[in-house]
Image (cartoon, rainbow, N blue to C red; front, side, top):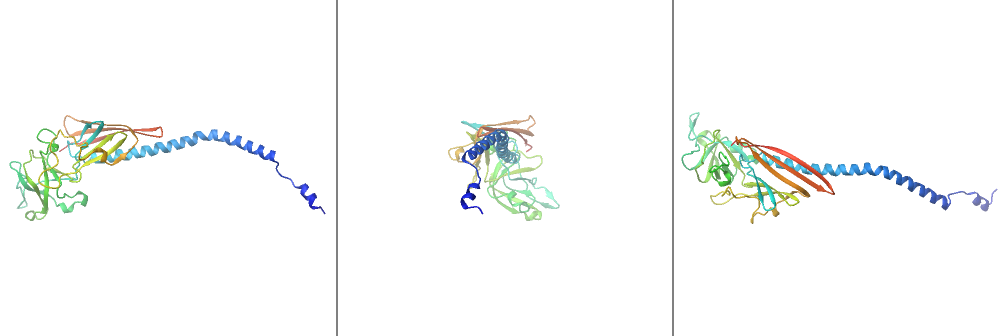
Length: 300
């Protein structure tokens, strides 16, 4: 039988020198592995960062595209205010057809839109209540007829714009039409060949996307809600920021913008236009460049 001393002498283990040698060897192996793993891991991180930047930029571009496709025909324009570059337009809520002046339908006569004298009201074909809630014409919305964007026929001048005072069903047409009463008598300059009019929401009479330093902002100019007037007073006026509606107060859509530009080209026929957007975003020395084109329908 072994004594406790003999048993202790027979126990084995690592010495301090052996432990240090193992640690050194593991460190060398770890360093070698890290050298080979660093590039793939960095590539994965860079790829994720670029994907995030691209996703942010693509979301903004799609937002702008969706807005522009609802723009009033012949209202898109690019302007400059100081160092800011602006893409501005008049948004629309919906569009409809107006009744021709006192044109009989199935033995009934509704109130048409007269282009020889100032009108105070007219009938819209269809019932406003049948539209989805976000597309219905509301009080203080603007009615625009045949906007050509030229002298005497431009919404920015208020030439062909009237503000809605009230809406009601027209009993003389079997309640299948809506009577739109205007806030003030209006003589619209030109009749639409297809008897169409557009509706501009009072919440957003003018929308501008502004390249403001390292940010891209969405600036909204709300409309008039009192009196008989409308917002638009001069086609030379740029709504890209003002003392009462500064660009700095507009919400930021995207930051870290390293370059941003807008270009608008319309055709000789004035039926179509093309908006071109260039956007570059830089974060952590990583830059993503996007170029996007938006077709604009200018058929009034």
